[in-house]
Image (cartoon, rainbow, N blue to C red; front, side):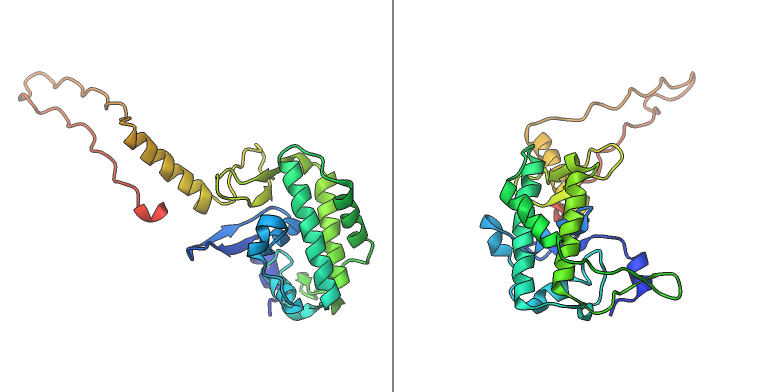
Length: 241
């Protein structure tokens, strides 16, 4: 089980695994957007992991809620409701990322899910956040829906982004001060972009500018005693590609 101290010290976000088996940290910036990593509608159905109620409770310790899996009782109807909320949120987040408004049906789905009471926050005697009293799945779904509504109506609604990589559709909210986040994760798509750009420059024959000319040797120095130019930088690790 995850205790209160762990929930307060563990950085938010998820550890995801690529199809090739590489692991990377992904922080979408909002609880509701973490749910999108469990699958979704259309092309995202192949990534579905919420097949049984236990699959949703297993997601709890991984999410920024950092709740133990046994803190919430999830039934089959609760799982269906969570998946319906997730699919509606996928469409709304994608619409916002591309400057669209989203559909009335998907907003209605968020509102219906938010009608139930949410999870009740609690504090432990040591002042840290504590797991809620045993709750049911409708409270979890309501908490997720309310988080989505707060995001879509809040100051960062226009900062919902889709990863800039051509083959990545992960969605996040850019909470950085300059608002220039492009990648789901710098250790994955950001680094892959840097390596591809470097290779493209090399293949195109682009060369770095020559080093500055060495200063003239002082009077009396032997010819050729000026400092040599800089050596080429080491090749980046191919494992980054």
